[in-house]
Amino acid sequence: MGFNTGYGLSWFLGSLAMGILDDRSITWLAVFSVALQHAAIPVLFLVKRRSSIT
Image (cartoon, rainbow, N blue to C red; front, side, top):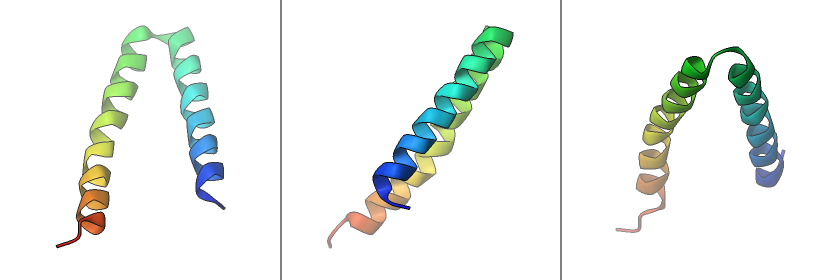
């Protein structure tokens, strides 16, 4: 699976989950969104560490 395919599929699934949560509870939508943003922080540090040239 290429990067663009994985990126697009992840974007679609995240939007689908957020749409379902928006129908059910705005609170759970906010919790889901903040949780995913916090989960992305270690990934960003990992990518930065791997891509930095020292």
